[in-house]
Image 1 (tube, rainbow, N blue to C red):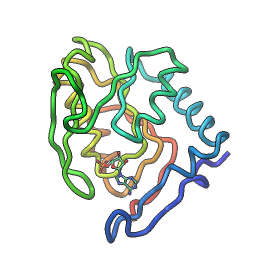
Image 2: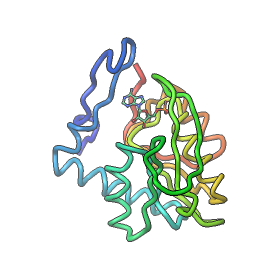
Image 3: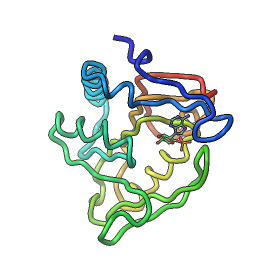
Image 4: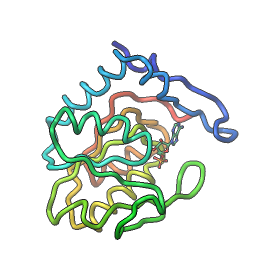
Length: 174
Ligand code: AMP
């Protein structure tokens, strides 16, 4: 099954010059969604980790299913002001704006190894912020798995210098 065929590409969304890679067309097909989760689970076997963490909100769609299959705890890295208890917080730049993500201070214990999952890596800013949150929590980033790598936006190459990264699908960014 070629998962690429299930990703819809929408030009100039959410603003001019961005080619948006839409995963709703992948997850609305139950076979493609299941294949995606199975592939992530398979790839995750080459990582050493205790917990799965994901970035709100499309990361949750994939990572919670992976966490369920693997019977590993699931940690939510959420947008600003969504988590109710004490948080670590980090500001970062997006391909199309600025953002903040947070994690509960009691989500990750010292030296716990965390596999981070997201739908897509573009510039890598979000992924880097996620890694910083894990490290602020004194956890260890085991690595990243992405469904989509927009390889010519450079995030993968930048992050690869420090962390192990795998992706299921690659697309040019534009
Ligand atoms: P970045 O921080 O630049 O690596 O951006 C990654 C995050 O922004 C991911 O969580 C994606 O959901 C979203 N994103 C960035 N660029 C795109 C794109 N071209 N199509 C779809 N989602 C994108």
